[in-house]
Length: 160
Image (cartoon, rainbow, N blue to C red; front, side, top):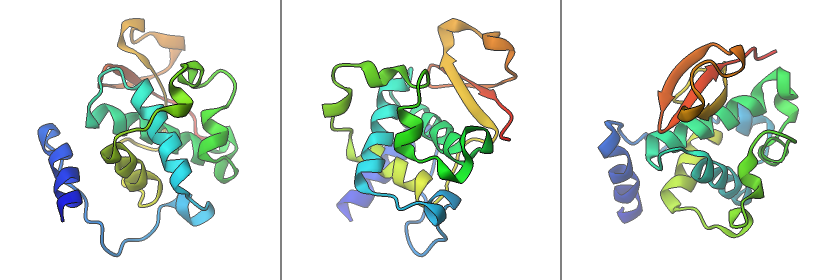
């Protein structure tokens, strides 16, 4: 009960309600991949270091992009997993941060990764495949702008 309260409290400042963690269908990702705790920790690390502003909404947006990229045919579709996408050349520069591999992300962030990768509770449309720091501006690479979230700008991309 205490853990559920902690997760609930993490969502409340951002106007989000905690999602039911009972019997739910698995996400499309979880239907095609075995999702390990190590996978969720890796995804949480990416979100922690990539989020421009470290808050739940910013973390979840980054996690959604990682999820969408794993599922998009453009990036290998259902064959691509969290690790492959995280370490894909030229994608997530945070993997070069000296603390990346040893950082222990907060439990709430790992739970957010579980909520997205296991249960499929996405906060962004499946076509949101790219993001950059707000300071780079909305004209980044000619991509169609979606929204500014947590210090990052998010963009649409073709999923196939």
